[in-house]
Length: 149
Image 1 (cartoon, rainbow, N blue to C red):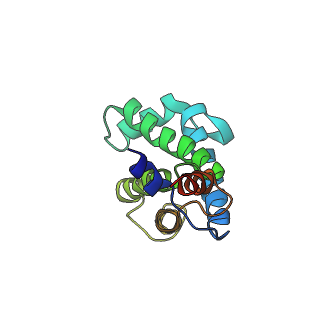
Image 2: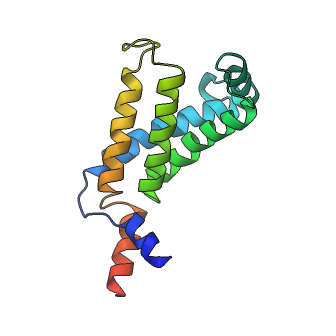
């Protein structure tokens, strides 16, 4: 089990992941808080569940709304602090891919297009590849585990 944690937390000493983690993390936490809590003009869990169920046919809507909102909100928070960066980025990337396929596949450009989601998916993939970077809890974990080897 320790080897799995070490592998997931392994990262480099570069700062290049920091702006990606912060940017993606803030955007995703904000979107998740819209879905879960109704923050920033969102509809909250019940409103999002209704949209998922009635407009997208995703039943039960409450489950899918909780999964999407929870992944966005908690995954975004994990990215901001750099903890479990790779799994958080993977879950966010998958969630954005589902959104792209189910809601935004009809056109490329905003407001209903897929361009924004492609950027979010690309940022997620970059974080999956690179990990949390120097200023992350993942880096601290991987440094400490390597020191004890």
